[in-house]
Length: 56
Image (cartoon, rainbow, N blue to C red; front, side):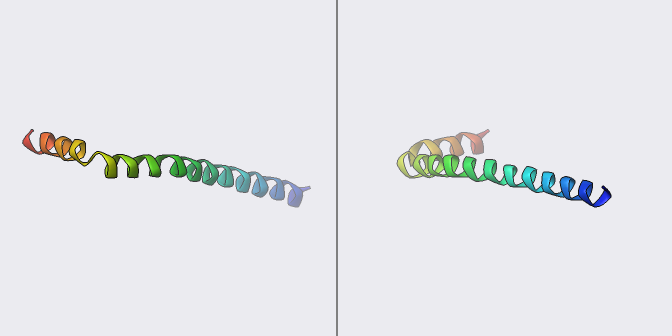
């Protein structure tokens, strides 16, 4: 019983960790291309934002 309970706990922990990695991986697959698009396609907006921050 004790060993079975430990295996249940370990398997649940692995499922939770795996789920988190899937969520993080999915978000990175969505967010990284958006960041790259913004960085490559609108450099003026990025430089303006940096200039405004530095002047403040």
